[in-house]
Length: 445
Image (cartoon, rainbow, N blue to C red):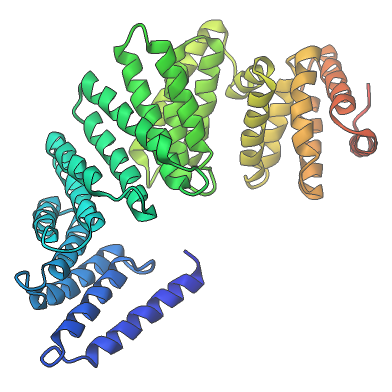
């Protein structure tokens, strides 16, 4: 949330506090309760400050509103307060208390309110039950919610999509093959409803859940193993279109690790190299202080795959990455190059230059034919970069070639680079790039 939004939210809270102070509880109880409820919501949703403190403040205002709204005469208003209070207790980790409040809210919404409100309370109840280790009871609540949401309204559609995803996770947590199959059916139903442009976060979460579920089913199905793994990989890649490294770093790393696991399960050298790249990408994002367990798991996965690849000869991770670039199709190679180059370009010096130089060295060592093909993809990316970044990248490529000790191998690398410049770039660009490289001491072969 932007700084301006934070300021606006703080001003809104201060305004509500003034209104509440000016509204007598004794003479204007209904208005006082409405303001207390709105102030509670504002504190619960505050983008600044300590989230735990915000939820506790919210509960104090909800208590005021709940004491005024008599459930006998104002059941809908009381239910709304209970639903909000339940969400706050769940946010604070007290799921039993939250479930108790959601159950009361569901019952009160029968006497008033909209079907969407009652459905939302059922959805909240399902989440609590699932988190309490009662997935079957959670599914029961989600079933009730889905039957109540109005599919003709945008709010109702969003509610159905969200609840289908939640029900799928409850089905998954049953821990059975039948549960996983039911979960996949839920995710597929949600997937069919989602417009990725209008609901990108729903899209990303559901695709990730499809991937996780298909990966789990692949372990249980002999005949369907290959198809499940292929669908898992497709779904994880769809999810990564939403959960990018810069916008959602933690989720990006999580999906990358799960993608690596699916590639590893497919077996074969190329897939093991795909897994290695995915695990490296995950480790580059996970923070060892904030995500210690996830980092350890990803590192263990990386080591496991490296040992499997050692059977074909010991190579560096960058050498495996270069070898992968040489055998995949153009579309996949373009994606792999962009992801790795942009990650390296975000590093501080001297790691930025040394990392790109290491790639250049290992691409050069692929030999003329394979090196030329990979360099085409690298150059097409480099030429799109801002001038200073473009120059840095090309200097790093020269530096990488200089570290190739064998004269014939270095000459092959230079030939591959020169041919790629001719194949990948237009006339003026070719001249500009060659002039720059020669100005930096590179001798055209």
